[in-house]
Length: 268
Image 1: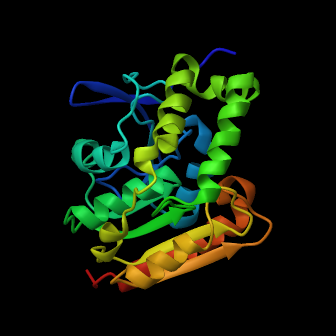
Image 2: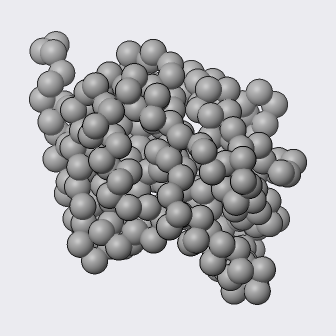
């Protein structure tokens, strides 16, 4: 199957990243910047950005990080600091490059962790709130066990065949860069508890009750450590990708959260 890149290409610090705008641009409305999971890319959001933009009236910007989708490749192995590096070195320049003025960071899995690190590490008053789908705040045994199983599935060829239509020539970089970093013994003590404590905007966490990559302990850490309010939503019969497995329920709670953010905006 031929790989079709995203609608546009944006260059950040000499690296070309595929990206896609849905709905109004940043100078026309507030923007949701969506950060994909550890195996994700622009195409793997499927129709969710359109539904999100239509439901909220906001523009949605999605992009593939380097080494994913049709973006430029990266050298492996990825450092265990790869999520911090993305949050503090790439995301600030990307937000400026797209003319981001005001809005929300929405992240799935690794993307949720990156959004958390950014908001807890960089004082950016443009960020009105965080929406995090199945984020990782620290490493759990269930995460490592599931990644080991995924690696065996990838090495057998089955998972590689599923991912190849989304990542094309980057498929091995995308998977191995993610899996090898998580399975590195040095990653076992990874935690972003300190970033959570420094977030100063409302946060929503949406997690499936049957998430194989994390437990409710992730939510509990956020509720315990966050200074700002945390809205936690557990979705029954759902795994690690709420927006794909339970799109209607996920869209409904996300819209309700964003509506509350809009209601908090000062009058023009």
